[in-house]
Length: 97
View 1 (cartoon, rainbow, N blue to C red):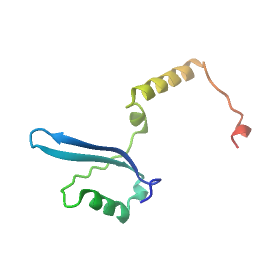
View 2: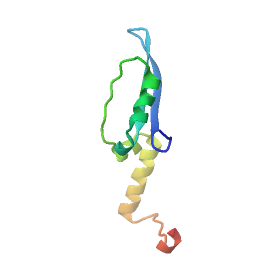
View 3: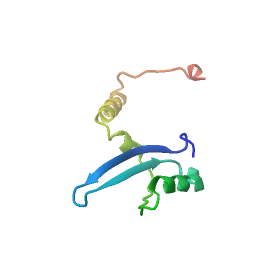
View 4: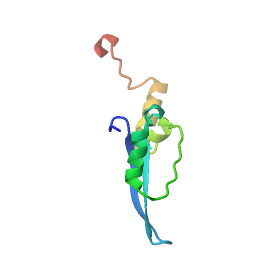
C-alpha cells in the first residue's frame, strides 16, 4: 500500500501500569476502496502474532479538524467572517485554471 492511499494518523506506544506491558495504538486513515490484501499484510507485519481489535467507522472531517485548538480557532474565525461578510477574498474563476 502506498503512502498516498494509507495515511497513518496516530501511532503511540504507551505503558500499561496495571499490567506492566506496553501497548501500541495505530490509527490508519484511508478510503474504503483502498482496503486490500496488501493493507492486511501490513497489519500482520506490524502486529505479528498479537491479538488485535479492528474498528471501522466513517470519518467526520470537521471533527478531525476541530481536534487541534489552533485549527478550531481558525475555522471558527473563518465561519464568523463568512457570516459577517468580512475579511473575504474573491478570486476570479479564470485565475484558478
